[in-house]
Length: 535
Image (cartoon, rainbow, N blue to C red):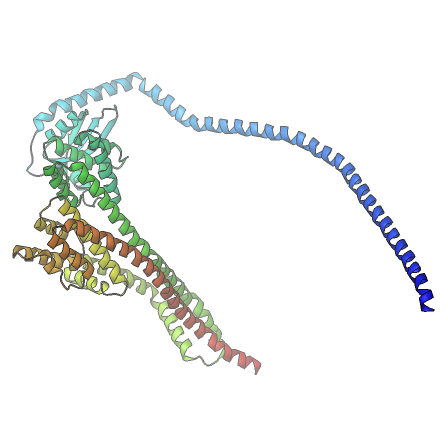
């Protein structure tokens, strides 16, 4: 029976599956048709929208163009209005100068100036020391200028200005002029970055075949409106025209130029290698400036973080902690010891914050004064800082780099060893290294070697000492010193990077401890306050 029914079952299932797939196919077909109709309707609806956007754009573009034209017109009008005051001023000046009585005054003034020019030789009185003179003259460009000049007599000022193409109208001196203008611009040293520009440009001009005095004149025109630098260059030009050597002209400017540079220029004048020396000195001071900036960069981050942390902690102790004191005193709870300590510090700072600040400033001023004026104190502070972990190595490596770089440069330019040591003692500001150099000079006078003073000295690394000994034995001391300078310059850079990474976690830990102490002293009494409230 089952065998008979099975074919009918298959036939029925087949009919059912046929109709099922047939209706699914019809449904899918209608679905596709519906999507197509929907797509067609969307396309039809986009037509008016597109037309609308085109219409709007066609309207907006001319409006935008119109506004752009109006903006340009207004901008041009604004520029024209900016020139109106200058045009009015120019017009009024021209009208004023064209008046007859103004012309007469100008003529009388010119005549009077000529009289002063003629009478100057009668007032000739040469001084034994240099005097500051103030002059009024017309420069080669036709402009009336005034300036100052330091020399022995008015005739010197007059002859120099005339040789430079000036028309001199007035030269005078007085105690007031001497007080306000005497030796101004000579008190401060020439900055390293300015020295690099000065030496590089001067070397370039001389290599181009321009005479030394003319090269200085070009440099004097490049300093802008700085009166001190202008007078400095003018004085150098004057010394050169009076027959002085370039090194002597630099030396007569007081402490403006480094002793090292003056001695190197003096040596180059004897060897005829002035341009090479100027290039070497430019590279030297460029390297010194880079090292100085690295030191400043290394100290900038911790200094800023420390000052900001002190400011924030001071604010918390003076203005925030007293608020909690009022809360705890009103609640009548027992205050733990840690909170009492914080409150006591807060009260002390509230009462004496001005005195603390004044004392801090006074301490810095006194410390700086003693550091500059008192050599034993300076030596003691430098000895301490050079023994501080990490930071001490930075100072030592910097001093070794400066010493070896300068020593190598001096030896390369055939400066005698004894004279080189005297120059090195003037270059360095570190009293520890100065004592080593003085010992070296004393040893040289006894016929001993240079390296004898550096042997087993804690301030001079053993690697540098061994290379110094090798240079002495092989006769390659300048080359060895240059290699030492390069090596310790790289070590200096690396240790500065390590110091930054070393200081950052220390500062963070310091702040975490201090802030954690303050927060703990504030939070602990709150638990007692909450317990009392629960009760």
